[in-house]
Length: 172
DNA sequence: CCCTGATTCGC
DNA sequence: GCGAATCAGG
Image 1: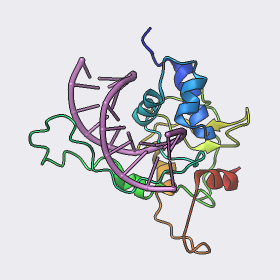
Image 2: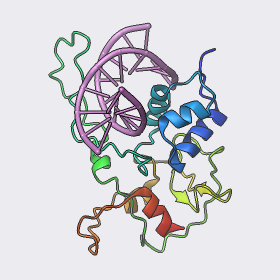
Image 3: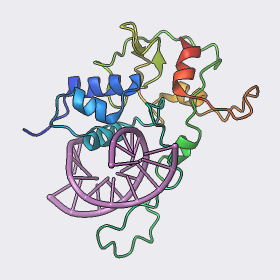
Image 4: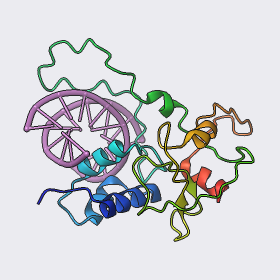
């Protein structure tokens, strides 16, 4: 059977992924059929990527891709991808704005691939939900993307190590 | 050697 | 869109 990514499958995937489960764990949790590669691939396709470190935070610094096939002329940069957003990834919604968070309608089940994945509440709680609005940039809507990708150089922590978990913690 | 995620490419 | 293959790091 082909692993057709249904709503429930994607929902579980997103949920587990945001919870901090590793790709292999999610893949196994899904029952099989899907490999960790498939999970990761789907996760990336959905637009998710980068959250709390599972166990071994493999910080990728440089990926020159692999010339497996006879790539003739890959001299074209094609597209800068979404690395720009990734750079400003650390989403510290500690104190954004007087943004009226009234969503909470989008759950892991109803959450669409292009819905704003702004975390509302505890990911492990049943009350957990997402913004749900139309994701404009990355995985967030316009408003949330604005505060999410804010180059905000909050002092206090010189290193500025902002983890999603910590962000969620503050947000809860 | 185990694990992790990330990326690219072929289907 | 999906997933294997591969890469790179811890």
